[in-house]
Figure (cartoon, rainbow, N blue to C red):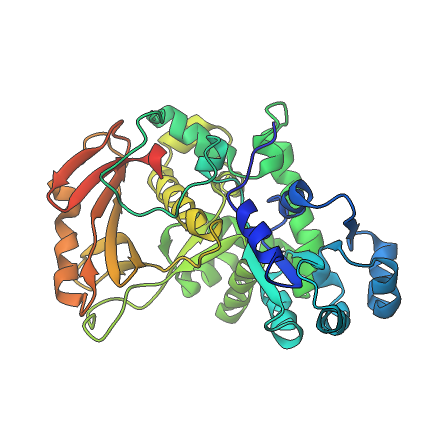
Length: 404
């Protein structure tokens, strides 16, 4: 089963504007596949995962680029940063849009090389795992904002079907193959990730501690990031935990959701929340071996929140936009799960594992009146298991989780 991706039109658009188009993202999310889907017959493909090709790119980048002439797709270019200055020279000389398509899995070091060598010459796009809308074969949709309109053709989730989706995760190679064993896929993914990516970024001597850290981090998805607690649980230093969290971010596996803050939010906490992009990976790392355990276990609420926040994030990322998201929590206990800032407006979102959302679920939205400053308030939402759209108040609506 081949699924169309939301990002595809952005690739075509960027290829008409920039000599270099870069897609970043974690391994196995389909970066090469999406390029292959739209590439011209004359464009050749080469992967730096091939050790011999990699050595050539590293030791003689000029010969490599004369061998693999544009238009070309270069996969996993982070292995040969030596190529960047030469790609810049060719791009400046030829001035042909779409000459180089490149992919990379280690975002931070990759972007350092891009900013130093290809500034103004590269269109940068990010890709994550399959979004819910891509799985539902409706890939070309706008970034999510709370709305009072809904596609009535969408099939609402039951609790059981939602957690089956959460458990299966979003990696295309697994989602598209119903015969693939879930545990084998994620076991291989974690092993490959450790072997190929982590050791490329850090020299980790405490491998067992790092493996434990992955599980500790997964168990805290959707929670305030507490480095000291994680360091104690993993028997390493706080500095080490900060370094390892950075590795997960570098590899595109997690993101940090920061608290909303301005001059008016003096009582708000300042520490971010940690979220995984893929809920199937969370289940694997937390030894949740089936969807029923995900639905009934102590992480059920965190898994649903992680799923919703990551899906909303993907709706922006796959449209070529940077998510402008926050949460709110103050020292009195008032909390808003998600605040989307768009066009000088704040859209509050609560995520509830219920089929009967009510006004009690939006009681904290009023805190925005005192902290919004010059921004206006947009429509609020409660994303829940309710099967249809329901107005909760004049400025808040309950939205089925299947809609996001």
